[in-house]
Amino acid sequence: MKVEIRLLGSGVVRTPDGEVDPAAWRTAKTFDLLRVLALADGRAVASTQLMDHFWPTAGPAQAAASLRSATCQLRKVLGNEAVVRVGHGLALPDAWVDVAAYRSLAEDVEEVDSLAQPARVVALVREAEALYDDDLDVGATDCPTLHEVGQELRALRVRLLLEGAEAAGRCADWTQSLALARQASALEPSDRATRALMRAWFAVGETAKPVEEFERLRSHLADEYGVDPAPQTRALYLEVVSACREWPPRESTIGREDEVRQVVTAATGWLMDPDGPSGVVWLVGDPGSGRETVAREAARTLMLPVVDAYADPGTGATIELLRDQGRLTKGLAAMLRLRAETWSRIMLVPVSEIADGALGADDAVVLVPPLERPDFRRLMTLTLQGRPTQRLKDELFEESRGLPGLACGLARQRMDLGDLSWVPEGVDSARRAMRNAVAPLVIALLGLFGAPTVVDAEPKPTAAVEEKEERQRRYALV
Image 1 (cartoon, rainbow, N blue to C red):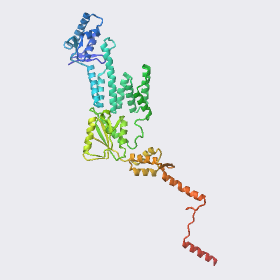
Image 2: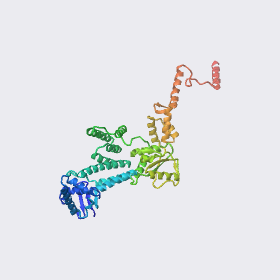
Image 3: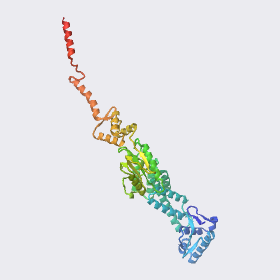
Image 4: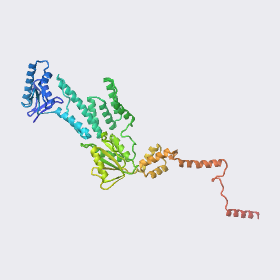
């Protein structure tokens, strides 16, 4: 078993014989010497540097004697082979040190983050947090190396927490993102930490919290440094306060809640893949059925940006929305799956139909059919900003075949042409409404001027009626 040295926190050392009693070091400088050697990660530290750190006021001979005495005590506690002389310095070549392990995890986070694997970043950050019991204890030491490393490790922890918070956001794991961002902000308030908090609070539905976080940062920066938050933070603040109070926005899609939920479920599974997000959702429906709306609303629910078709991989986007691909063939499906895997993206692809054998085992298929009449009525009411008459609803439903995108286009076209007007029953076709209003008016005007109208005119007598009246006159004369 290696010597195990845990410096983060109270400082625990374990040897094959068990945990070392702190009294075994005899002096605080002996334990600090161990910590400095442990922080070198197996590399030698020059003896002159060690003497300057721990015995700066002693003469060279006295400082060298003190160093030899402290080294002997370390070997007595850890074993004769634990501390070795390398050239003109000392080293701990064969010890496990938590700080070295923590720094290694930080390097892994940087590498994995560059490969667009946010779920793996979150896992590594959580593993690093499990190592970081507390800050390096430097309260009772004058050693400059320990003070410098303590500050460095604290800053590194804040950076890892924020990278974990941002990666969790890219996975739509906003609860985890919020927890990591709060830890980072508690350690060191900053623009970056505040932005992570604002996004996470907004995503989990606490829409008042982002404003509170912004105000807290603004007050802190003004008091400490006399400056305002960064432009990026102010821009995010304006975006939050101008948005609706609830997240996701209500009534942004009508009749597509199930389809949006299916896309979100599929995307969430891929986002949590440690190897990076990769997958394809086929949105099957006719043009005008609202497939793009479903895709964009699912991305908004996940709070992830969407890039349109064939964006450069350097954009770092997670979700890509393609144009309508028409009929999905086996070859096209294979090409798009390879693209998603190569660029670590989730691709949302509208298609009108799927050929036999085109689907892969991990593909997600979401059908986007025409709307039912109740949802269609809600959509037209929202689009027209008024309740359409039954006649107008039936006309638009028949013309659009219940496809929401096509129906909205037809409704807007009628509005642009001035073919809609308000009637007591609601919004109706202007031409029909005019016909219904003009007919009674014409009749009334004709009656006003004494002109015969269809209503007032007596029916013209027929020949049979005239003959009957002539006979009656003759009988009366007789």
